[in-house]
Length: 65
Image (tube, rainbow, N blue to C red):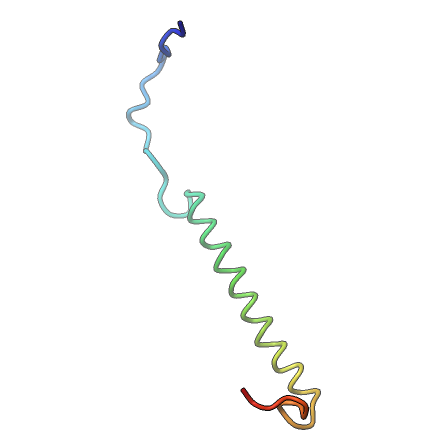
């Protein structure tokens, strides 16, 4: 039979979790926002890069949506 755990110190005063920038979840959300913002900026830039290389937009084989 396994004996019950023996507690040496009182941890009651420690916070149950961190708030703000001390939380791992907060950093995950910030990283997600940065990744999504970068993806939108790249799509925006790709549109203008491709549109600037054509004489007419949209290109001839394809019609507007």
